[in-house]
Length: 379
Image 1: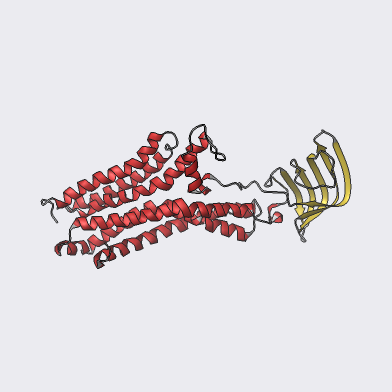
Image 2: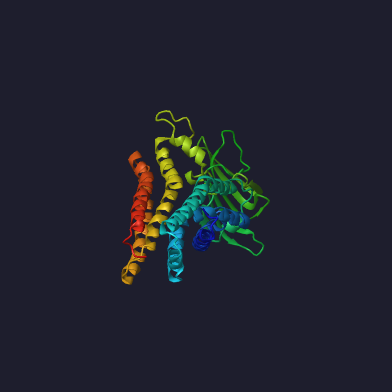
């Protein structure tokens, strides 16, 4: 189809506009999201390298969300540009039929559809899962950056830190620690394990995943509700077991499509897969509807915007038609996003979500074909 130079020209121009718009939107959204990810360093103590890698691995998921809107804008802008530069008029006078250009737009739409399907089904889950494993497997936390003067910090799971101040040598002054999960290996080590501990020290510092404290005491309540107190001049607490409150288990959008489909097609009351409950299947249905169903709306965009190729005598109607078609297509995309929220509630909603773009695309194409081939249309 694209061996013809004219078709290649249309394809390249639309694709160039599409890539420019897509990456512009994605870059803006990624910067905003990257700012939100700063909590990984500020609140959770991850290194800057982990932060940047985690942010980059989330970039493709942002790109995927903007594909339909970017394609709508790029196709609309391209058609208006072709029209203003009289390129379409030259094609009509040379005998090229409008329906062939419509088919070119549809082929481009199908190409973008395959691109989005590849992203949503395979690439995004893989990269998002890697970003989550990056947090899960990160060996070190920059704990010193989390602890602030005169501030109760509960960024760590089952741990609360308070320090009065820090000196020039980065030493912690007047330390209070509440450990309710037994994460810190204290010098008290009774049979039956520790229920919770309160640690107070005058001074301390962090070195090689250890918290070294001076001049303080440890009060421990064990599982038998017995309180033990011990004073120390110096003690070392291992920080290897502590973890932040950051979610480290893969979320549903980070799960591979293969696993989600296996859960979706599993029979009721026979859910042998891990965590594949009925409530989870509803989330799976919504996620897979987004991954597979949303790309189906892209060919519909191609067909609706192709109505711009039909020009009326009155220029004012042509002007209004550009905005009308764009707004109509934009509303359909918004409708698709809203309908997506209901796909997990019933099979009817799922079926409608998939059938609607295909059926409307077919009906619009038939109507467009009849209008273009009608001899009464003024070219």
